[in-house]
Length: 506
Image 1 (cartoon, helix red, strand yellow):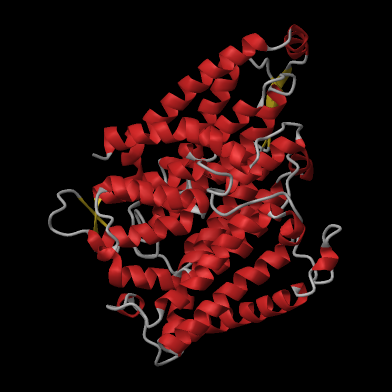
Image 2 (tube, helix red, strand yellow; image 1 turned 45 degrees about the vertical axis):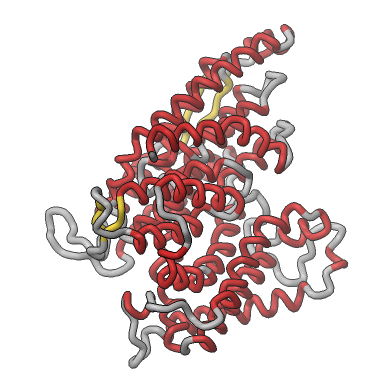
C-alpha cells in the first residue's frame, strides 16, 4: 500500500480540536488549516475547469517539449510535501499536531494549490486545469478507491488464534502473507495477518525480528506480482502497463521471498532455543485454534481482483466486446466495499480494531502528492534523457533509494516516466503500453523492483510499514526506532538487493 498510515482519528477533526499538550504552541495552525481548505476549493475548481470549452487536453498538452519556466520553483511544493511526510512525525514538538488528519490535509492541499498557482503563472490557466484534472480525476480517484476497497474489505475479515510459536509456524505465517500480498494488496495482507501473528508470538521473549521480517515480506516484497499488490504497481497500471506484466517478476519475487524466509527461519530457530523455559511452557499451554470470521468477504476480494483486471475504460470487456464508461471500475469497487461493510457484523470489525483513520490519512496526503508531482513529471518529460541514469541497475537503485525515504508510489511514477522517455530502438525487449507507447522491459523491471522492494528499507517507504509498527507497539512489542529499523534493513535487505542487481539486472 502506499503513503504513511496510522491508527489515529477516524474522522477529520474540526480546526478547534487540539491534539496533545503542545497544541498551544502552534499560533499559525489556524492559518495553515484555512489556506488548506482554500487549496481544496482551488484544486477542485481548477480540475473541473478542464472540462470547459476551449480547454484542450490530451497527451500533448500534458507532456510539453520543454520544461516550464522556473521549474525549480514549481518543484518546491512537491519536495516540501514529501519532506513534511518524512520529517514532521519525527519531531516531538510538532508530531502531535501532524497526527491530526485535518492538519495533514491542510499542508497537502496547500502544496497542491501552490503548484497550480505556479502553473497558472508559468504556463497558463488552461495548463493548470489540465494538470489538476489529470492528477485528481485520472490518477488520484482510481488510486484511493482501490486502496479503500481493499482496506475496508480486508478489515471485515478477522483471523484469530494462538498457535505454538515454533520457527516453522511463524515462518509459515510469513510465507502465507508473502503469497497472498499480491492478490489482496500489501495493506490487506498486513491487516489480515499481523494480529494473529502477534497473538501467536505473544508468549515469546524475542519478538522484534518477527515483526521486522513481516514488514519486509508481507508489507512490501510480497506484493510484487499484481498491480493491486502494491501502490506503485497500480500506478503503473493506471499509466498503461498491462495488468499481467507484473507476473513476469516472479523470479525476482521468488528469490527474495525464499532468501528472506530461509534467513528468518535460521534467526528464529536460534532465538527460539534461547527462549526461557517458562516462556516456552506457557506458549504451549495457551493454544487457541485458528478461526476466520467474515468469510463472505473473500468473494468481494475476488471480485476486486477480477474488476481491476478486466474493467478498463480503454479496453473492451471480455465476451461483450464493448468499452466501459469512465469510472465504471471505480463504481463497482465502491459497490463491493459498501456491500462488504453492511453485510459484515460490526463485531468482526471490533475484533480487528478497525478504523477509517489509516485510509483517511492516505487520502489526505496523496491528494496533494498527485497534484504537486505534476511539475516534476513535466520536467522529466522534457529532460528525462539528461538525468545520467540509463542502465537497469541505475534505475533500480535510484528508484529504490528515493522510495526508501519519500514514498514509493510517486517515486515510481517519476522514474517510469523517465524510463519511457529513454526507451529507443536500441532496447531489444519492449513492453507496449495501453496508449500504444513502448517502454524497455529491462527498465520497467528495474523501476518496479526498486519501488516495491526498497519501500521496505524504512518505516516511511510504504504505508503498511507504519501501520504494522503501530499495531505491534500497541501489542507490547518494543519496535526499533526509525534509525534502528534501518540497521535491520541495511544489514539484511541491502546485501539482498545487491544480489538482485547482479543476478537479474546486469
